[in-house]
Length: 485
Image 1 (cartoon, rainbow, N blue to C red):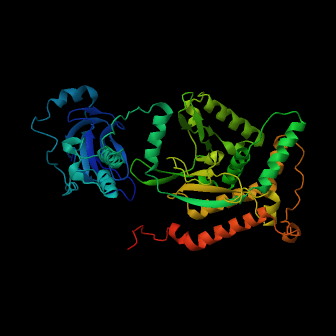
Image 2: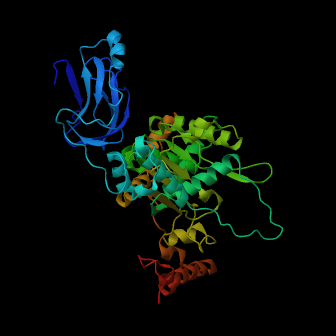
Image 3: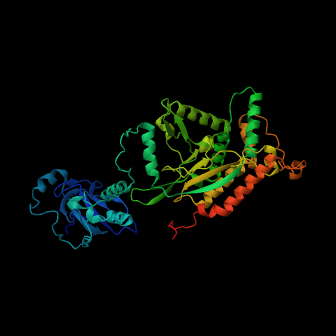
């Protein structure tokens, strides 16, 4: 080889990259190229790269066809460094017309890797297809000579995903039925619900005693009234703030799942941004759900948190939210207990780690008619069901259970939770709560059992008997979900 001719070879790109596929030549035979300028685009199973010219001069030979797959170190082209821009154009005519892209090289180089038997595809495309169990023979390549590139496989995977998505039933409409297109928030919610079906979720349940929460909320309301404030503190304010505090200590509950462009699974950690599921009603009686987001909720004290909470809920109910208010939630609180629901397993939205649902606060069903004195004598207090529905790909059951346990501890006043709440509102520290003990049953029964007491005891015995007799019928004991013989 002449001393003025330089070969450009496929460079090393890490130990794990052994070959690459030629996607497109940026220059042709007879073109002048400056050292460092892109000469050819190459795709590998790891990266897409531009191979630059290693010297300035005129390209005299191109040794590898577009679409071919070759090993690292293979000569790709030859550059004559003795030719300049001026004489390069003159010399380009001297290149024999029969010298084409697939001309055999004059010097020994590593042989091109043969095409795979299944399809003509780049290494990256084959790798993604194997991971997604896609048939390359059914994919039309957009590269040179029909080469299947990474983007072709990704597009096919997206098409297959959309085709596999559940669709609405297409049964004939009943006579007289009307159809109303869903628009705005309702249409967005429908799309989000369909997307949520692709999330493998699981749910943790916990029953929380709310006696301390109830007492502290009443104490907060009384303290605010003495200052002349009209601010209202709800159960949901305190529960939501406890969720944020617990998530700050255990951020795994806010981790989300996604796949990168090559289909590899990833865990996303985006911060503590709490979504609030707000059910609103229009003037015509129709209802719709929106989920505004308290951004960086962990950076706010209780006063700032309440202000952000109240502002978002007020604007949600007047349809004054903007797009940014609805984006970025990493976990969500929904409160169906506000309309009497005992427990709920809501759908988890894509991009979030968990959705927390709170149930109604009250006494167990069947005992709500008994007096508080009677219930205390029986050791029964108000409770609330709280559930955590989480993305099982990035959040594990133990993490969800520990998160709910921490929320419970905070709502019981652990680690000065209520002290920080009172301090943020510039109120004196909360008073020490007297231990609430069950009233001795003998004291209630001194004058004999009342009719109300007998009804309460009978109701409790009936509940226990029902569970013992029929509870197995409601239990899901078969992990395979098969029908019993």
